[in-house]
Length: 108
View 1: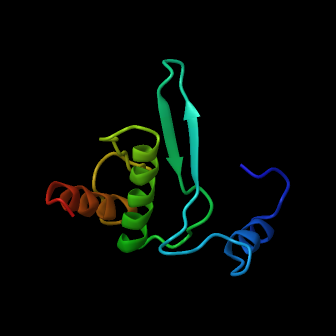
View 2 (view 1 turned 60 degrees about the horizontal axis):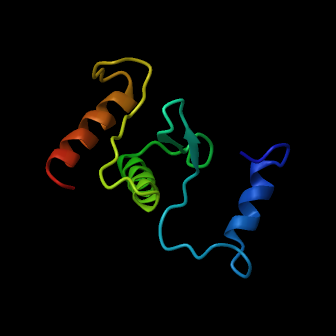
């Protein structure tokens, strides 16, 4: 993604009010790669947002979907990854994932 550059140095340039990007909402990192079948895949936010709240996860998903749209995918599939495959109240990611799935079903 950025080689030997420290994240704090990289982000300070990105967030610089004079020279950086205009921030209208949450910034998230998206890595785009092409698989063996020439399909574009998006891996998002492995390093930038460390908070794990519902609203943060929702913003990250919205950014990734918007990026997929800009690459020509009108209906991208989203996968939320966690340590286990089932909802477990002791693992907050699984609970938040279940909530996000329900929000998607309701068009939120």
